[in-house]
Length: 111
Image (cartoon, rainbow, N blue to C red; front, side):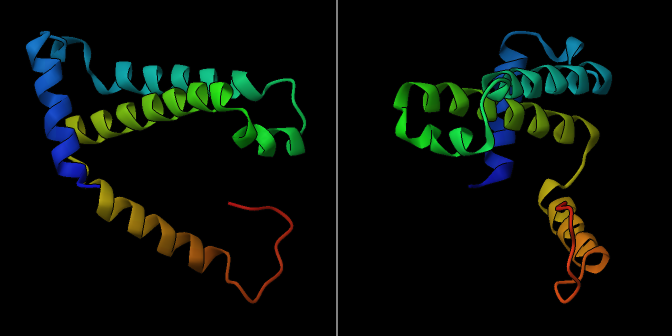
């Protein structure tokens, strides 16, 4: 995926609707949290194993895809608005976590 191209298309989408006035970092972070909550809501009352089996239910999986896409879109927008190089930030975070949680050490909790 070409992140810059997706961000450019999202920027055009926002500008065509004059929504940039609403896309402050504060508002985008709140929208991101709302979308993440909508994703969590899908899994709220199911067990861990049942959540893994969602791939066997195409209708539910489509709902999840929509919510994951919404979370990603708002992540892209907030990074774009703040001038964050998302690819660089992600690689840096992976490296930071690799140093924090070396593979030769057993960890009870994940990232």
